[in-house]
Image (cartoon, rainbow, N blue to C red; front, side, top):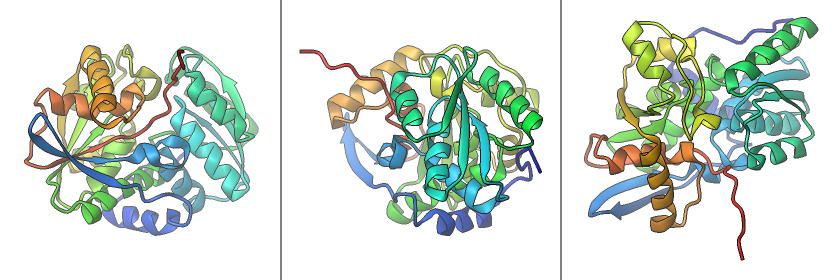
Length: 307
């Protein structure tokens, strides 16, 4: 039984196949056209996806398109784990999810509610992933990587296909980058549109990999690190992005938090910090194109009611 994930780079054909495969389970999330500060933009409201984040797409495609083992182990900053656990429940697969100790309660509670086994290890994603891989190897169980897997990348790319079909006037697609699964997949599904990958200054694995010519270990220190805290860009995303480059941008934590507040002020959209990263880059003037589409990738933030 294989305990590793697939490392062959996916193609646009794989993204189209993923779209058909996951259609019975994943929502086709809406796009919203708007204007902020006198400038037009479009938002892909992926935070309205089942589980509250885009990760369900990749998880579904991986479980539907991969080997049928009846059990899967994964590691996650929260959203991938919830996606895998939810997909596993839908498909009758047993799931174990390793998460960092820093995971917000807003992500850990829904994860536990799926019935999956949840194991907390380490401060950041990389430590949780190491423990998960060790257990998968020991027990001979399939390990599903959060972003370094061709089926996962292809599943995330279905967002690009939907934007191309539902907002054809958009010339640029902007996404947040952690381990690279979303940006690589969207690049394959964008049908010729420019793709911008935005990273927090404190979690810049894509920038580091581009500079070094290969994935390298990078520091993880950002307000968005619970979702974007991959210490290394995935090998599969790096291969895709090497063949199909994207525009890169960086934003500070202060810019991310301002963008998160602004999404609420302008649209009453309550997101996690990672989902505000594309909007932060757009507000700062770092996004090219006349009509960009920003992917609001998740809303599994912790909100406290005050009276």
